[in-house]
Image 1 (cartoon, rainbow, N blue to C red):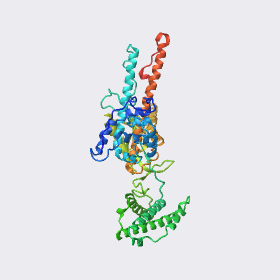
Image 2 (cartoon, one colour; image 1 turned 180 degrees about the vertical axis):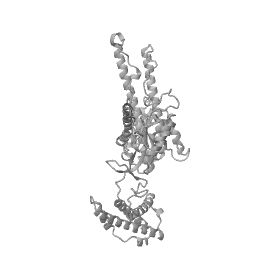
Image 3 (cartoon, rainbow, N blue to C red; image 1 turned 120 degrees about the vertical axis):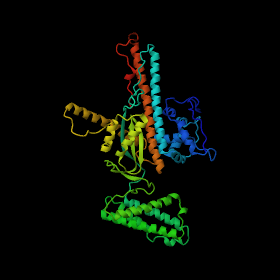
Image 4 (cartoon, rainbow, N blue to C red; image 1 turned 90 degrees about the horizontal axis):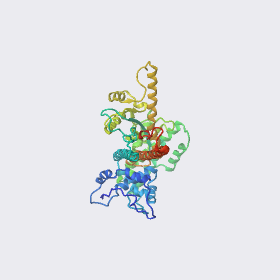
Length: 523
């Protein structure tokens, strides 16, 4: 069951610290506690549990906050619990009434926390966090402008405001007119698996089926007669003899694959005979009979590949444990093929959003129209321009952008104009669009270097999708915090320069006094 908690934010003065003093109001975890929409999350979190049946579940603030801390700092489940136990600011972020040195929960609860927040839930939370962050930026700029008018006394600062047009759509923007920039691209979030080869997968399947046979033979005294008669030590030696070679010859490698296939076939036939004799697979643990199904599918695929001239097959298995992982051809210099989830990302006016997660390879050019429609749903208008890679610039997307009045980055169709000034303007515009498209590449780089997108450690498909979505949520929240810090830094610098100008010659300014529009705010 679930008991609703008091979601109202506890002030830092009321937070009990046993060693004296108070918390710093400018700490990142204190600011994040104001940014996260706890009330909206609890409304979607509480219906997952019964009202009065079962043990009380952990509150939503503790569950989501723990996942956020883990993703932000790149920790393991055990280290996340220890960090929460040792840090008073993290406990304030998680809604504790005061600092406690006790372990907040068992590390195994992190698995259940990941199951309770689906990929769609985290995407909606990300949108709410960005919207709430924009409101905080506007309120901070408006309050500072109001303070400036009061300090001037003559109303000279009225009507001036901090320029946030690059991030937030102006209120007086004409209806139906396109606004903003949408940058889109796709990448791969690799899963935590070893580099798969046919020989390695077949050897792993042979070992796994041998373990299943041993467990089934223990169910009856006369089941041992169905055990396959081959030397397991020699089977492993045949595998190592080829696997340890750097570049084995093709004929030698193909013979080793054929040998491992024969061992696997005998094991699968032995398992069928044991089941016919009365052995039960239900006595095994769930992951073992799921692995057995993967071994059977691997045998089918490798048999087809061995006797055919092709080297590709649909839904090719690359892991017996993470059966949903597929090879994603990237064509990069570092790795031509990656194994994980393919993600489609859109950067809307500086804020990254996850658009799609797919474990199967697909052409990301088909996502442009859907991402543009999502942009219109959020902003009530299409973007002014879309910065995308060459794979997105096809005939269908060009026609859609032309009808919607969107400028799609890329070379223009037809002959170049004869006017050299027009050609130069087109080239400058193309370069500007290409430079703006680099922001989505920066999102991938930041996510893979800082927020664990480089290697997804979750072993379940739902947990992996949740980790990917949480990475983009953390990136958006951290960007809002950086903007708030930049806002206060620029405002402080502006006020300091204003005081210096007013102190010169009795407070008179020789030149033009600084205005709010002169204060730059960039990402």
